[in-house]
Image 1 (spheres, rainbow, N blue to C red):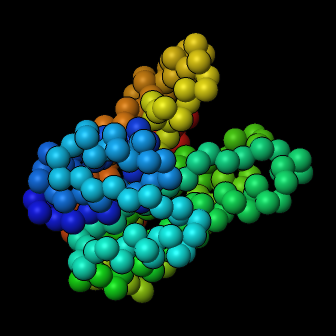
Image 2 (cartoon, rainbow, N blue to C red; image 1 turned 135 degrees about the horizontal axis):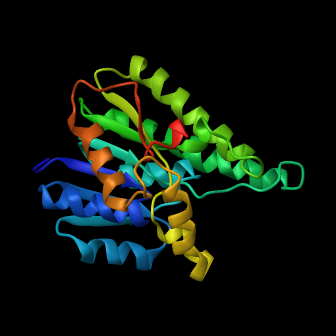
Image 3 (tube, helix red, strand yellow; image 1 turned 135 degrees about the vertical axis):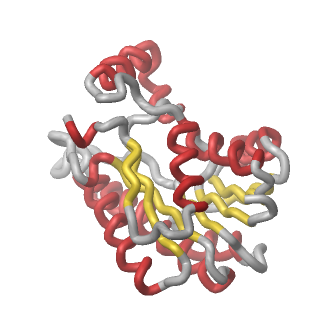
Length: 234
């Protein structure tokens, strides 16, 4: 990855931070986008060779403005996407629509902005366990969005070749996303981890390593790489 230019869309969370560190350690030129200026500043301080850009992923203009700074791009990773959710009949349609705008249209905007600046390389999107194992209730739109991302991967891999398009699908990963749980966070991880073949939930570095693999393996395209501790088996 030395001297490769990598753009990470939505790279200020736990997985994004781990990915920035891994890529920077390999000598990549890492560009990170996010919504929060403080988080972006931390990303720049946390690793060498990192540049950060404020970006609203649901805005095509905002995404396009960020990508206008780059003349050439080797790899793109799209991590942006909050959990979303809520009971289907009780959640306002505007909130449901936002999940799709963030997860699906955000990825589309990034791909459309990046491809004219790429001669090969890869684009890695992100999915999740809910695409194939929906929970009992409360995440209909997230399930829909993740499934759409996986379909997008398969279609784009054919149309945009030789650029490789893949997705990494995560199970439960230890993350600041769960910090609202407070003292219940660690018991939550233990309970879920004990039910997995691996006996534990994932760490951000597990997720980041899988993304780097998808970026580096030049025979991998149109695939969804599952990194979930075996959750689909139980």
